[in-house]
Length: 370
Image (cartoon, rainbow, N blue to C red; front, side):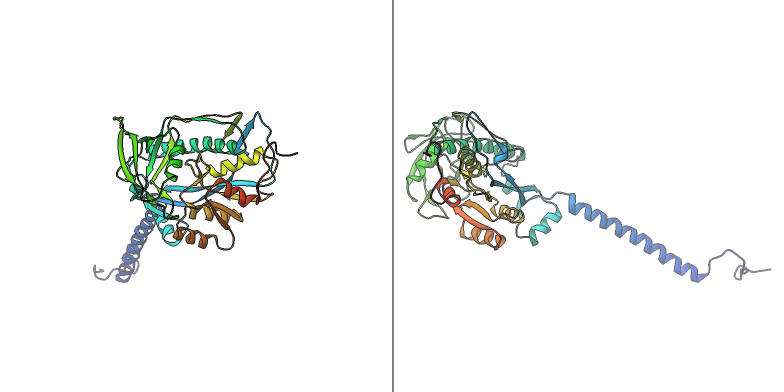
């Protein structure tokens, strides 16, 4: 008889050695599976799970003139292209945060900074309104530059944003409508831009505005501050659009901006309309990128995301990029590092300066040819 301690050689029984080796192997498989699952979960989270931050990355570079249709007036073709630039804005994932840490063309901001009121849909609506108004104003400015009669009207300057630490901070709120400045009626927001420019930094000025909540008009006094980019120029510290803007054009011009929002294509639209309505090719057959808001008086307003835009311009192989002259020295140094030797970045403060960059000596206006 065989005892339990001495099984036969043919018995189906694990040896002590087999038992000692099999269990660790099974444990390793389990641990490996858990590790792989955790890795997969981390990768999914890194790429798809949003964080409380927003990523600003290089966007696209798009042709303006192909998006503009002129009816009722002669339009001219151009061998060159005037391009407008965009910034890609998205909820940041962990991978975006990592990219922002190692890539100097990506900026990361907390959502509370990007959407101060916490309402992303409202901010998108405001940005869309700013784009719609920038197209109207670009057309208006271009046609006036070319000598056409344009009738313009409005009922005040709507505050769309207030700069932190600037004179309007704590005094005005987005949605307030400025209707008077130093006793001067404000119909379109260009009236306010012009009125502010006639003063000096340190001047105390009076403003009458209609509050965003519908209350009675209020009068406040603020002291204008110097612009960081030009200490001799005054700044109130607000972004604006015109309430109830109406522009009566001598003929129809339609601009299709697609899904792009915000005012930063204003200068590009203006140059493109001028190019379409003049026989001369503004870019002399070259491809030129442009960013900058356009004001009713022809001045070029500040825009955001210039580092991201210059990166997009460089990737598109474009040699010349026209930007507002409101950039700080630090910002200009940063975009210079991104542009390197591939892109010439030129700052302009007015439409005239932008045109001088493209056509030194000026352009031939309609009706000037002999």
